[in-house]
Length: 273
Image 1: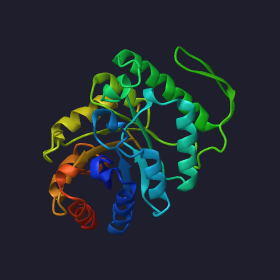
Image 2: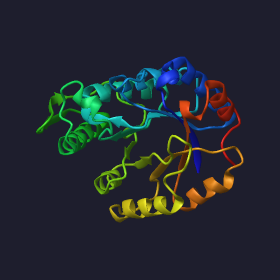
Image 3: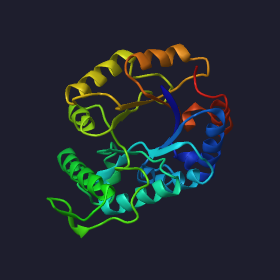
């Protein structure tokens, strides 16, 4: 089991300097990753920071933290831009990036800009976009002629430090999302609600891991990540999730848990043991 922090960079936490402070404190306290929300929350009336600028700032003040969004709605981003952005961050951080992707759960973030909100279209764009990212990050010329995207003999440069490419984790609980996750390197889910209650039980997580495993030849090296809320003394709680197959506990930090000082104190206290 490994431990990271998962910051909702909305509201008061939309100030990226606060996430930088959390990241620096997390690394000193023994946490191993920083993940951040990736939302255009201003479309529904809430300030929101850019995930990639925030992660880049955190990369410059840390040396060991794994860095990534959770999750990026790839259908509302151009794959070529994502490929370049992630490769640049991986170079900046000396190979510490994980890319997570999903359909995007907030329809307003598509509709506000006249984009197709249908799940079918988003799913098709997600799968096509992931294929393009995979090929661009591996290196060499990429040619692609699909329903949603075209790539005409393009070679990405510079490539990510991580070889053969940056790991890809998939978010979502739907059967299609779990089948999609099985094709890549990991799965990530939201396990708690605004009140800090765990909504994904160890038993439910066990079923998710089993379902993903049905679509893979092996689960060796596969990552299962879940957000949650804990105290430093909640080792038994985390152990129950580890027994169900969890490999990453992501401590969820957001405004409903308290003010910034309270969140900083929780991070400074270290992972649950």
